[in-house]
Amino acid sequence: MARKKLHRPIAAMAKKIREYRELKDGPRDSQRFAVDYETMHRPLTQKRLPVRAWEDVRNENRLLALLCRLPRFGVGRIVTRKSWLWAHREPCYWVVTKVKVDYMAENMDHGRAWGYLTFKGKTEEEIREIDKAMYHDWRMVPKHEEEAFKKFTPVPEATVRFLPYPPLLRAIILAQWQKEGRPVMEEPVIDLEKVLASPQEWEKKKATGTLV
Image 1 (cartoon, rainbow, N blue to C red):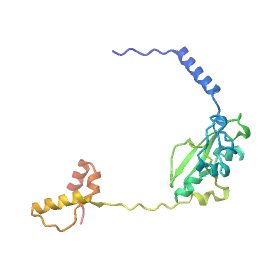
Image 2 (image 1 turned 90 degrees about the vertical axis):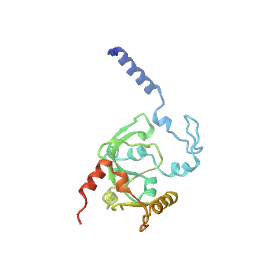
Image 3 (image 1 turned 120 degrees about the vertical axis):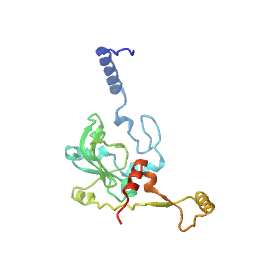
Image 4 (image 1 turned 180 degrees about the horizontal axis):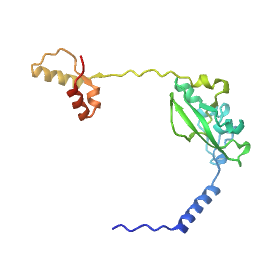
């Protein structure tokens, strides 16, 4: 019989205090992600940024660097990323719902933000933290362009029912048909509906049949 775990309130409180002290004594985000724009090094770690990122670091903004300039730190506004604009035709953006600013940072341009994510035209129902906020990749959608930016007409996905067999497997199937004396009237194909459906669903569909 497993031993019952005892509740130790003092030990739990001591653990929380240790975690809080580690968080308090550790470097803040404004220190971790600070950049020397002349040498392209991070002062805290002395690590050099990738050369490919230099242009974006000089010309683009971090998320909090955009939000700190707006009333209420941009709550309710739409933000997107340059990489999304280049990679996807469908709208990809965040609707900011909450911002927690690091008031110890210079210009208050560091912190965390939460919101609703819409990626490739599909909007998530739950609020979650905005990731990659420290990347120099963020852009603010102008207020008068928000409705046009969000407009999207989904294109119906083309459904494929049959696929050809690989050459070797096709040759094996044709040889088997020839051996059985079966006339080859059509190409052997893979029925995706049969492959992806469970055995119970497929048997039920076969028994029901289709209306002609």
